[in-house]
Length: 311
Length: 187
Image 1 (cartoon, chains in turn orange, brown):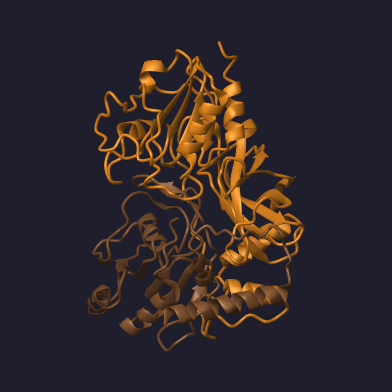
Image 2: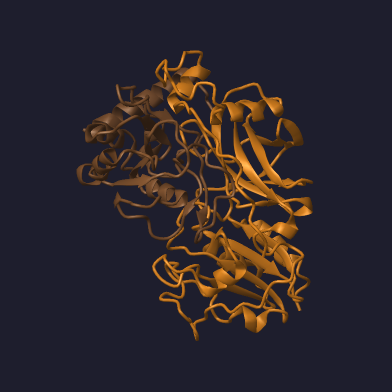
């Protein structure tokens, strides 16, 4: 749809072990990690950049948490949504905690503190925090996350204007692409890699676009089995059953034609840089909402509700 | 041997956490990867040698799956990368690559528990030949030239870990792989 955001200069990082950070937090000097002739001395490192971001947010602790930003890009304006998880210093997920987030950029506090909502229902033993942000400027930002008013961490965000989004944002008209069906699987070796296969392959998108509301999910359960994207197809299928809207068509399309090598025509036509993606499309063919990465059942059901009343 | 190492690392992590006495009820028993992946991330850095700086734990990035030749949406936290957005589909096969392995493919390889050796393209031919033998000597290794400028000619990478070297032999790579590799992070 447009040019993806360009990469900024790569960071050089000196790192520091998790154990060292733990010990440092306990007041013990960390073990030295470089020789006296360290060629990296004086270079900005990832840890110091994280610390700077935290300080911009007014948090005076070392970065010991790892926020996991689960979205390819965050849109400027009213549709800014940041799904994320948080790993503790021990690399274990921190679920349903008292979390606050800030968005900073180049030493400036842009937004926050924001209290994200944790969603765990329907996501097995995992979950995801969602922070709704309203950002004015595209470009790289830092997400600062603090848990229980104490430990904190930072992660980079790619923020884009909807007009420059890598794929179709809310408010855009969705293209009339063909998706494989039970009757016509096209080039696919396997119509659905979920085990057992989902039941969202009855019709092609191009056969129903513009005739009613649609939920389209492009994901590959077999080749993306992380906590983030693995459950997407099953989550969408579960929401379909829960909302019981006869006037809404649910479609799942795989990412690959084969064993993870050749992407499908639909993926290519939509220009997807990543997976999974899920769109909620209104009867007029205009995108009502989209989910870049994880799908939260409650938010998907809400978006379906915004496509209009059931007929 | 590795089991003993993991047990010791686990004890070290437990002691560190106990010493900090966080008492956070929000910490969950579940993990985003195999149980001992957290132990690997908590491992102590290998010390510096005559040829290598000490190993460094990198700022860990999680990330989604990229399709085709899409670039990651945010920069990697290190050069070369050790975690973050990575390629989808089939992981690279171990061996020596003549052309630079794309960074997302390298990170995918690391996510599956492989280790990588990157070197600057200007490395003398004799050293390149020596490096090319490493995949036959150390399991689950890829050797690839690396296009970004590195402070040292050679680097070893595993998920979340980086060690920079002037030169590299199989013993050093094996030690690095034993310490930080061989743990599948893709859950």
